[in-house]
Image (tube, rainbow, N blue to C red; front, side, top):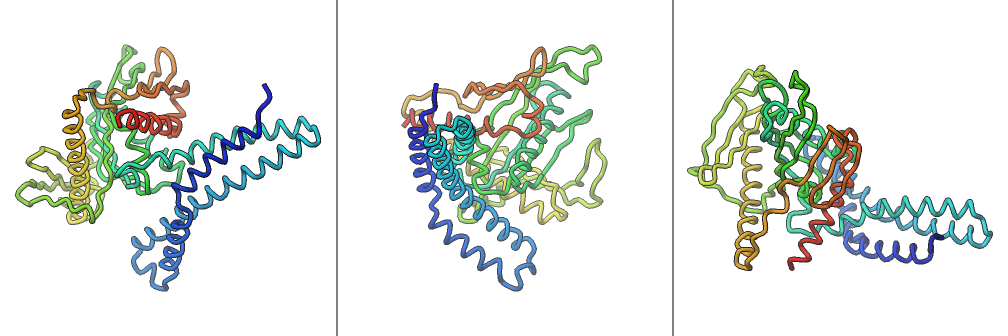
Length: 370
């Protein structure tokens, strides 16, 4: 069937109208001007951490603007290509236009995803915690595989990350790990990864070569900001300090700089050992604890509203994805039905299609409940 180029281009332009409206190019241009002013001050690098934040924010803002402007230019170029091919009756040119159309549609889908991230916390940076579940050493190994998957995903996009805490299992893998993704809209993207992940494979730790099913839980919370005003009384906190350690209990720090913070009323525990000083780890732990309490508060409010409305459906995030390595190769999201047959690529961070499908699924579910 011949491609209806005029109709396809009309659809692309309509989508771009929405993208431009949500992106707010004028506001983005103002933000870029201000960041350029901050980046040009002579003593910028006297505070390396602040300088890095400013230059990174400037780079991201420029990239976001360029993506929108560049997409408009690609659609215009496509229209010219179609006109040339049609006027000259050139099948090769029209075939080239068809290939470019497919590329633009795929890239525009990714750009459009940002327009769906309109939740209260979607624009925030993210704090992700992975915990091994049922399945013994295989589950601990699976947790480490998931940590690498998300860090590789961030690396592919050039997103800065910081591993805040790792708790190693005795034989292999991780009991738990917590890391930050320090880029705007990280929470909006990664929030759809929250839930229970399931791995099926021949266990490399079983000398009889039996198939093993193991589980890991992923928690995603928005990074707290000072303006959120989540106050935690000191008498609600229990703070323990200990020596940071690496795999197998090997000491990686000769001082008691690691911090374990327990929120007594809720039982929420946060451990931090990434920073060099106890003070820095305490501040990082408090920030993550505040983020979790903030999200818990919002979840409780949402649950109360659902209960009042008679909605008793389970959380959408549970049992959300299966990774099958034996007897066949498949990764399938159980909510969106999106699946691929290349687990190796997924574990290497190729999860954008899963995230985009999850965002669309979540937004449709929210619209249906409104």
